[in-house]
Length: 508
Image 1 (cartoon, rainbow, N blue to C red):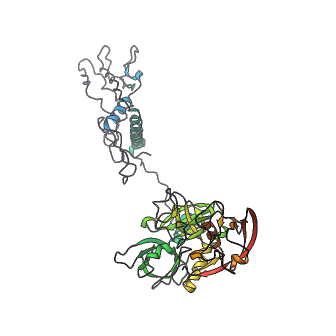
Image 2 (cartoon, rainbow, N blue to C red; image 1 turned 120 degrees about the horizontal axis):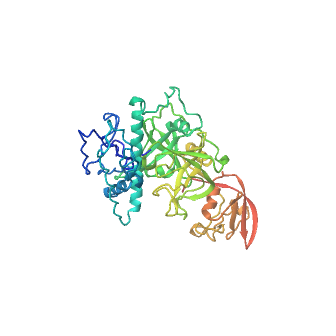
Image 3 (cartoon, helix red, strand yellow; image 1 turned 30 degrees about the horizontal axis):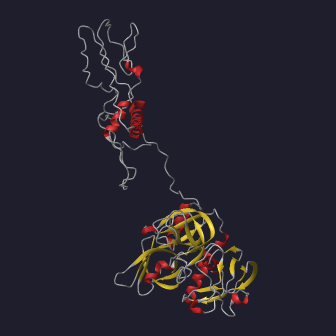
């Protein structure tokens, strides 16, 4: 339904026939013909109920499609609209009076007038208005004319429909169509997006982080309730600026805000746990799902505060699994790595740390990064292009439990330094380690498995390895003590071995 003329007088239909002229009167009192320059009056059953037509010289104005979008183009120039209106005249046959003997000649438009009140053979009829001159052709006016035609047609159609409704059954009927009273007990069915969001939103909070410096720099992120003791799980990069001497607060969907403190952070996993100060007693933790059982195509629901817009819900599907993602540049240091769940649910800066839910409302991941058109992964891109990445909840749960218990993360390791720059052929064990040390830790997991410097690891736990970051992402999906099969190449030959993962505590 067009709203181009909403709240305005409906313009007359340029293609509709004009109203009949005043019937001829007896010769004693002939009716003077109307001046040719004056338009024929509209014929309407009631001047009070019919809408007043807008003057033909006033074109219909087009509202912008989005009022806030100042870049949207407006309606065609008035002369374009007028040209279209002039072009929409009645067919050519309607401009010529019929030549029927003994019959009253119909004026232009073909609308037959009522029979004369008394016989008036030989009386002069009202002259037929001449056909309007053909409009001048304008170069490049076709597109504008088509656009204007669509707008004008929408307004005219609405006007005719309104007139007909007003005059049907004596003009006493209402134009409003009622769908009936909504039942007072109306509820969304369980499993719908609305029902899942309504249940989950009270357990998701918007995190405000401010550093302890004089500038008070910080940012906005998201977190969700992990337990009834007031622990909140989020991303490390959301709270890192406030971890040392800064301030943290969590605001929930009911508008209540609580101060919080950092319990522990894991830079490598990009996971952090906060604790609410004076936590309320009615906290409802979100249920945790099983990210290992997630399948490509499963529905997803993301909740967060994109660009500071709290309590935003978006939907999508799982578009890929086991996607190796490095949140930094892949050169090591404090970069974080994950074998991520990929989703096309809209994720933007501010969604970081928020839950990715399945169709039942269980958490299957922590939204952490997005892909941008400029290339690379991270959390500061301009906006979502349908490629978002979440830390699988099985990994995040293990990290959260470690942080709550000890305040420090524990990482599984293979005891070997790999090249972090090359990719495509696998993860090559470097010739030398940091500071000139051995790249294979003596008596470490890799050494015990028979791996040596120069070996290229191409498979880990059944997953293909194409780079050092990919290898780390896969290692960190396991726990210390897990036995994992490794495929590697040495001197052009492929071989397999089993490594028992060791552990490293802390980020340093």
